[in-house]
Length: 390
Image 1 (cartoon, one colour):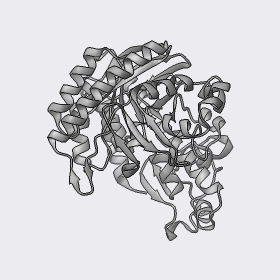
Image 2 (cartoon, rainbow, N blue to C red):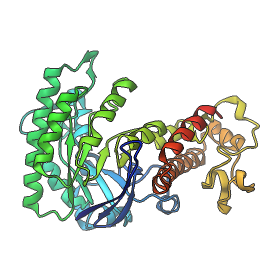
Image 3 (tube, one colour):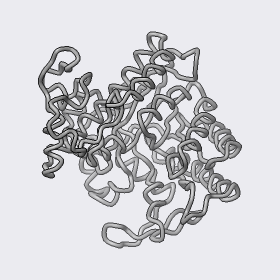
């Protein structure tokens, strides 16, 4: 099941506001989706995800197939019952993970032969196998198996001919994914993935072919795979708004707060990225006024929270009242600096809560601006605040 209801559009850009109804609930878009690779968002209790406003999270088809395996998943009726998350879940196809195995895999028209990174077993992933796995996982949004077109490999930048060959195979795999999805009677929604590398005319050809297949939703893949930022932004500006207006648009694996706001302006509805969780574990925090490196010595005795406007547990404590609004609970930069220097696990946990809260709150503010007809002013203020610095 998928229903997409467009509520409003921004007259100054391609930004839009909508609701996305799935089998496990309604998602307000634009939305950021936290990544839960192994059936958990690293370092965050599910209760915290609910409290910070997470509406939909990701699971990783490849890794969950490896561990715990499909027999376990079947016993729990899918990923929702296994990880006790009863809101919507999107699962990727496993294509990116298989591609990233490098010399450990061989891509053919039939699918991908590879050695398991867990125990070395010889395995095979095809569009049909990906659909079978995702059906067992019972994810609300299923992704077609595609070949992720790299920007470069061992210093070699992908040529137009190579991108075309890869894109055309992804289209054939899209049809096979669609056929198997239908054969399995999967009651959820299958998204097609636009490929074509850094070539706009290939992106358009991929888009046109996928739209003719009439998927319930569409994703833009093959970005944020090593290309310069200006190249990613060029494709981001070209592709999303050309997809059907009455269906959801998902930009895969992107990105920074700036990428999200600009992506919304380009017509994107859904985003995911490991950046907020991964950067948190490495001591980088996102704030309204720029990025903060908590490992820097200047934070050693700083009494301020990470972000004085933030209402997350790390910044505002149990009261949920920010310092800017008169609250004085929460943890100091000095304390988080201390936890990081000591290797205490509470440090990355609090940092992850903060970063995810920041991303989800940013998207909430975007939705509110679209509802109020003030997205252009919000976009400008966002740029100014982020450039101010912490």
